[in-house]
Length: 194
Image 1: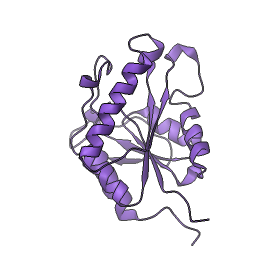
Image 2 (image 1 turned 90 degrees about the horizontal axis):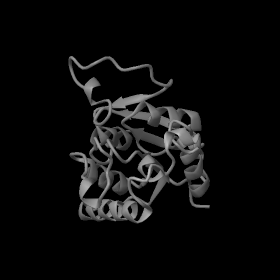
Image 3 (image 1 turned 90 degrees about the vertical axis):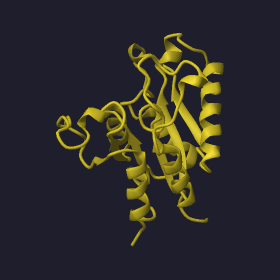
Image 4 (image 1 turned 120 degrees about the vertical axis):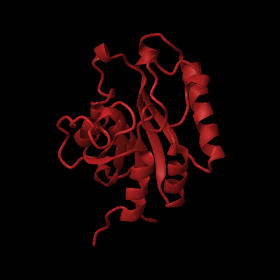
């Protein structure tokens, strides 16, 4: 067997893409965070497979349908390709918060699905997102939690920023997706059996 898949999981809105006050309801509503497409390209060039895990409660709330969500993701893939980047798959929780599902972050269900699909030990998988729900899901699934201060928690970034709320143990904090990519690429490969 040819070694472990190097896999990274990213949140979509607020991490890879801009956060929207009123949901991303059409392809035109989705735009990337500054430097995010290039960060994914650098991760890909470093041998990392990137997948997205995203809560999309707008589906469960009837704000948009699956065809619209697929069109949003088609735009995202096209913009990524234009930057020489690739996301291998998008895993979505379609449920509203009141549905009580196991896949809506901070529950670990989406990440467990990803671990099964790619047959990778979740302890080797960095998960980056811009919310407490992202890092809590990562910790609950046994992944490596990375918080990005570019979306929901951007008010906590920089000098004079608000103090961060309590984070799961072992959470690493980065300015944005580009800084996260720098960290991952500087660290090198998945920790090996030394």
